[in-house]
Length: 196
Ligand code: GLN
Image (cartoon, rainbow, N blue to C red; front, side):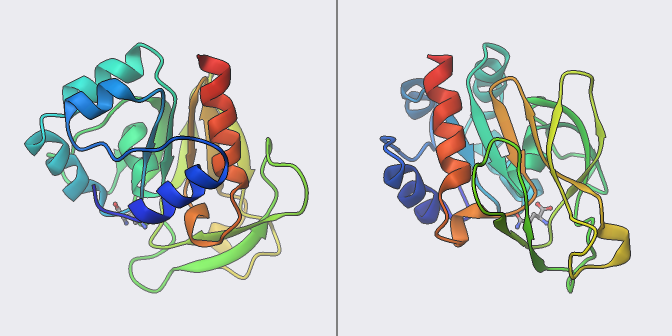
């Protein structure tokens, strides 16, 4: 629902997965892993309730289903969110605290190259669109990427945590699906394969 669904499908397809869209529980039952795209997290949280997906999704995550959340997807997967609506629902897939729209409200979309653990080769082009950052990581969470010190971004953004992993759950503040570089999706598909 919402977000760059087509781009995520194309990226997953390109790295050898067999992606389907998930809008109902019967579709959720069929997948080995789930990508939660960007969009508007409070709207997506409402849609999850409208589509009766919130509790089934929480249950699958508790059972260890691999998931990858980009931007709003990271917000939804988090256990705690700052600067959100009081009625926004969380999936509790990651023991992290994220701040919504952390890089600034409207203007603070930016791009930078960054290194991400688990992604081999040249730095990734990371595209941030009204993105969250991670302010707290739990003991079981690994930080995979931070905004580099020389990024062309607000000084307050430098060093911020923007990619994490906890078990089979992966999240990035940025949008790899818009760059044509499929290495983050490749990492996620590897996590899914290793979990099955
Ligand atoms: N700002 C959005 C939110 O709070 C996330 C933006 C995005 O997914 N590109 O949900």
